[in-house]
Image 1: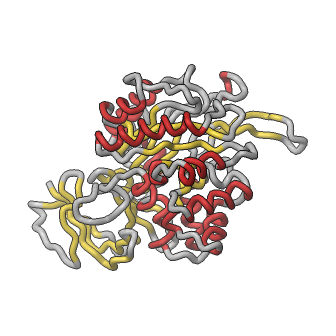
Image 2 (image 1 turned 90 degrees about the horizontal axis):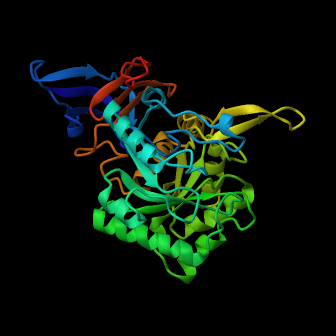
Image 3 (image 1 turned 180 degrees about the vertical axis):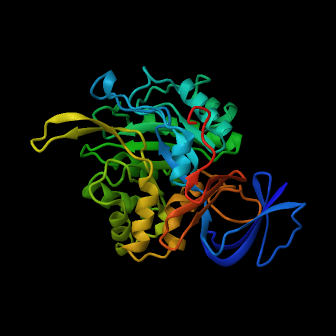
Length: 381
């Protein structure tokens, strides 16, 4: 059975106006100003002019939980599929944090496959904070080549919990990611957690400027942790790099304000992305700075910060929505994601006039209708 969506006000992200969208299986198979099919052939749903965007992409999320900085009781729980649908996220990239002892890269792979089975698209980064890689096959390169869901590698720099990697050590990781991506056709990125140490991104500039490593394979995140770090990240973007702003944690100001500042400084929004750092562990403090408990970084701030960028920052939705659709898809070399076009995966979000999420389609299936999640994971009902 085909699904025909009528009268969708499409932002692909480019504005296309009212379009009819025909979905066959998990793909968009046709788009036109007007498509008519009999009810015996297609299920028809009228979008009634709703703002329609690609499904949202979260490229840095702790799908099996994270935390643990304050002992076992501070470890955060895994994320269920319905939680992603509730904020319009139809594609996720899971990863480990500091801990690869109590949490396993194999468990991460299992959760990635489980989310796929529940109905959204999930990928993962192999390894974790440390420079000595923790992989499934025994090497980063082989993980990218032989493990279907692995599209890159995770590493940390400028953080007291990192391994303080040298330039040569990073280059060796990058070579494995680069070659593994070439052979597997995945693109391949080294996704780099940036901590708060004063070394900031210095080593990344050495990789690009001194050693001439292709910048497209270097994917720094948490660039909005401090103003000084963000200013340096803008220089990295000016070299052609994609920089990732965390919305759920590790930020010196509202992420949408960072985007506005970047644009004022002449950096294109095409070089920026959002990710949530969802379910990272965050300590709660009282007025005196004393630890009083823990919470988890939210996953819904990606959408909230895009909404703020449009409503408070007066950025057109066709530009703002790139931060969580087209741009992360480009960064991860996911040609079938991040766009509303023929041949793309049928991942769609629909919004009312106030940019409140009303419907979500993931891989051709309605997962949210009229603001209610109608399809949840196996253990959510």
